[in-house]
Image 1 (cartoon, helix red, strand yellow):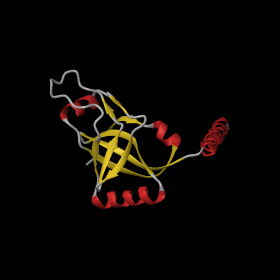
Image 2: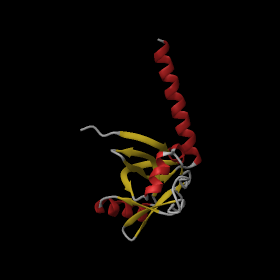
Image 3: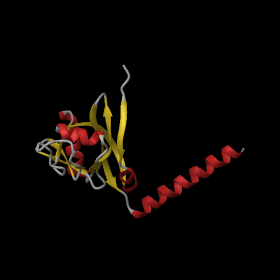
Amino acid sequence: MSEARKIIAVNRKARHDYSVEESFECGIVLMGSEVKSIRAGKISFPDAWAEVLENEIWLRSFHISENPFSSVFNHDPDRKKKLLLHREEIKRIKRKVEERGFTLIPLSFYFKNGRVKVELGLCKGKKAFDKRSDIRDRDIQRDIEREFRSK
């Protein structure tokens, strides 16, 4: 059985600003009008992050615009959304976030078998010199690939 995967949005800034140590696939609790807005691509999450509260993981600063075709039963665009993970994964994430200073950043949003999923990254912030070294490594790799193509 193949898993149909349709990418909604990717957080490119997260991979630039943070080094991703581990990533998790999470479900997300949404209302019907939120799903309709996500299908229309009306999401914004440049500064989104997640936190662990009372053994639950909540997604913050994730904006889903209101659906204009929904009636008065529309959703709050900036409400915090609950992420769905296994209890053992939540315990492991909670331990790492509290002890080692990791941050939970959403890396991408996608549909998997008709359900909205979030790729949540356990990230550590990069310093300016780390970012420069990553750019330098990428440039060197690009030059090497050019050399191979030209020969």
